[in-house]
Image (cartoon, rainbow, N blue to C red):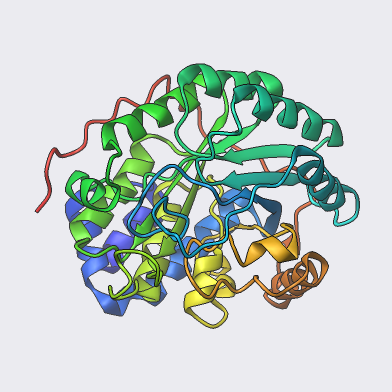
Length: 359
């Protein structure tokens, strides 16, 4: 086990069988996370990048079985922020909170067409901040328009590379289409973000190994990994929640194989385990996303229940995060947090061939 961890730490390469070996042994978590923390220190330093998250609409046309925003959830109160409100939140985050990146996230709300989205992007870019979008599957033309309007990064989680699981838990959607969207994002010139859920019903360690290899194969610029937390208003309400330690291990292994990328300590980590974000920061993560959404809206952007930031104001949340970062000897970054590539690898497309069937 130690030789495999050393191989990952020094060479940043593992094959599927080696990943499975590490994932299946519960006794090696401390060694893996320690190695990931050393790699994080070496490649991206000790600064933690804070990205202001604005959840501007919880309306979604999709019906994912694990998500509280799913179309068929009639128990949720739906909302959509107008452009002026979104801009004012972004302006406050930049000018008053000192944040260098804004993340606009929503369900797949079709009201925000390309014209409206590009106008909003252009307006926010006047604040001299980096901008990340997380608004779902779009056409190649739309992704290119976002880039031309000033968007810097786009986050589209693959959720799982297991096509059987994807079909089961994302009804009406296509894994192939998801991958094509990631390809189009890369071609647009934006940084590519993806990620996965750990603990989906039916998921195996083989699936998780393939997820990690997928992030490596597409050379993702940022990867968000979090545990599955069942929502009471979804078909998976009675499913077992994901395992925190396994989620931490998948995140750490991703850092070992992709040493120079940005990895967030997700809110889901904090929701599932006490000091979950701190543990993630000590296991390879280097990003946190303080929530700057209107307080009255946060409780309605419920991807999963029990989000740790629902009842905390933006300023109080930021103060807590700064204290958390300081308590482990880290500092808050002062730049916009683009990926600092440590090699010359450039990928033109994401034509990744994954196993056609697992299990």
